[in-house]
Image 1 (cartoon, one colour):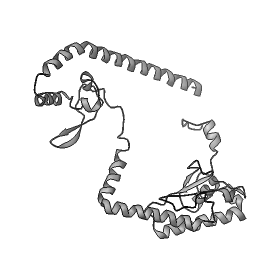
Image 2: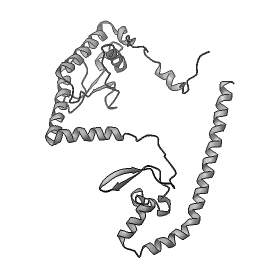
Image 3: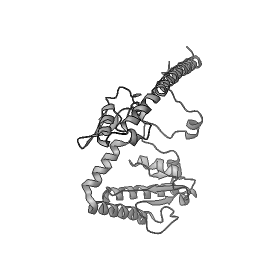
Image 4: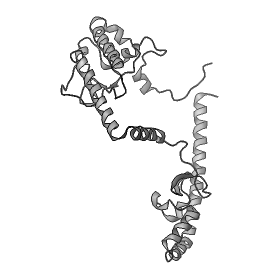
Amino acid sequence: MSKKTNVQKIARQRRRRRQKELIELGRKASEVASQSEAQAKAASERASRTETELGEERKALGLATAELAEVKKELAAHLPIPVIEERDGRFTANFDRPGSIGRVKGFYGNFAIIVRALCYILNLGPKGVREIAEYAVLNANYIRKSLEGEYYLKYTTASMHECVFSDKFQKEFGITNLDIAKRLIDYGMHPPTMSFPLIVHGALMIEPTETESKRDLDMFIAAMKAIAREAKENPEILKSAPHVTYVRRLDEVAAAKTPVLRWEKKT
């Protein structure tokens, strides 16, 4: 089967699957509409009851989160699972909802990293958070002063938690911030943020954070100074970097224009 035929087959399968999904959604919508009159009458009757009784009934029907989700009561039973509910003073994920449309995501997003950040903050406390912020500011200014003169600084005022250099000095030798970043990989270091902020042309934004030791900062500074010398004395070594990685410099323009979105085994 040719590649074109295979793509067409997949497209047809997707269209059929989408049609089935639309039919199923239409069926559910019709059921909800037919039940709305009876549910409206039941809601009117429940309005005369006490708030406690109403809350217990909603919980029993799986409607406890209707107000939080901001959906109509008749649709609440169909909310995706899991639904977060409070039971005995604790929050839990409720998967037992027969009327649910099911899951709409196969993962929990960035929840885990948020919990990690919260634990870090709680562990440090107010005093500790202030202290690590001061360390981050100190580290950024240490790098800024150490590389001042080697790389161009558009703004010479004291930095906060990051310092922004540019490739203006290196441009005289045909070297860009991309070349500097790629060469830094050869020194065993992850390149900094490139070309941001946009107000600094050819930007190299360095954010050392509070966790970097002075030894690591000095290693980074030494590598950046060595690259600045190489830009003057041997610019070709920067233009062809990195040299130690399994995959060398990629053609980013070609990758953007002709992306390979599917793996095929070579025969």
